[in-house]
Image 1: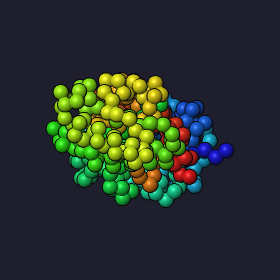
Image 2: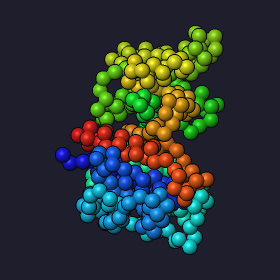
Image 3: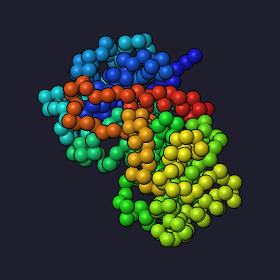
Length: 332
């Protein structure tokens, strides 16, 4: 049986991305589940392989068709865009930010051309992106722009718990203004369609409450009464399998126990805390609503330990395995 082909950008060269890419490529579980193409800089990857001490031989390719998918081979598209005389681990560097963007762009190009089944990304650094003149704040914005997707959906998955986010990188004050009936309805419909595309067709989506005890009928806030409950009622009337609002202190546990297929978190930290407390290393981000599938680690560049070889690759391995799991459904 043909394995899914997953393309992996090495992220910010000064961070741990190259190290977790190398460790993952050497992992038996990854080899069994997927074929890999890594996009990066050969000099950086040679250094990373030495740092982490894995037995890998780099095979430079121009495209996935040129890959040798044997154990111990790291197929690498070498963009040769890092000057090692200017390179240092653990530092903000415009050269590295620009290189990281170029790795991602190449991976998106490959996936857009259907030469790969999914992209599994490693960490990038926002300050390095800015220093490199890249006009995007992070992965989601890059993927949105390069796949012509206006508002990609972020979903976290860990141990079967799936969490979507109604709002992400905004202040709590701004978030409150974004809790509207129409926005909730739009997101629920798009999230359920994203799940269907991943092959998750049955089950109930729960809507998390915003205020303590979901507001207690206005006692602790009116957002549930004025916006969230009307949205849920209208969605049910339209035939959507949704429930809520359900207090955020219990809904994530209930979903993790299997009562709900997914949860719509209303703001960034509400869902992040729930998933990362359940299992920090195995919390994987999936970007939905795009023509291509993208999974990602949900940790940063870890500049403080970059170049030491001690970084755990568990999250990267899980991101690749999740990409391999969902890509056959996604590309049907």
